[in-house]
Amino acid sequence: MHSDEQAIRQDGVGEPDGLERLWTPHRMAYIKGESKPSDSSVGECPFCRIPTLGDEEGLVVHRGELAYVVLNLYPYSPGHLMVCPYRHIGDYTETTPEEVVEIAALTKRAMEVIRLVSGAHGFNIGMNQGAIAGAGIAAHLHQHVVPRWSGDANFMPIIGRTKVLPQVMSDTRMLLADSW
Image (cartoon, rainbow, N blue to C red; front, side, top):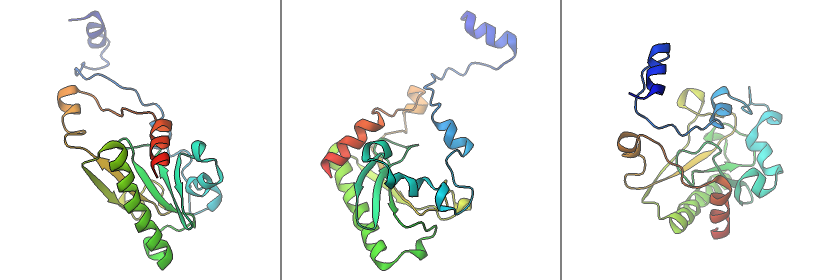
């Protein structure tokens, strides 16, 4: 037994579980709900603010006429994108026919580009409609495009005892934007 393990046990803080830790303190802002609109107020909405920023600062990959593509600040996997209408709406039923077409086209293109730059084997694509359905920011519609690879996160937490995001956000944004 290492002295660190002994100290933890003697202090009663907890039993070591053998997992290595990759600290992600940036996720605490998400957990605390920072930058999350408290209601449907446009002024507080990060998805309304992002298009006012430069592409690199806002992690914007592509700007369309009615919607844009942005990296998820709290990704489930490298290249996790979101397709967002510029218009501040919270429900898919509020989209115009033109917005539906562009959101679908940008989602399709996002899949093509992610496959091109990273060889993704599959995707999880979807919208969480309402806070009760898991929408982190329910006030502004956004569709997730989450790339997946065979065994991507399946064995790492169990065998490797860690989670992996192998690329920094700015590098991922540049690869995707340049290939768009």
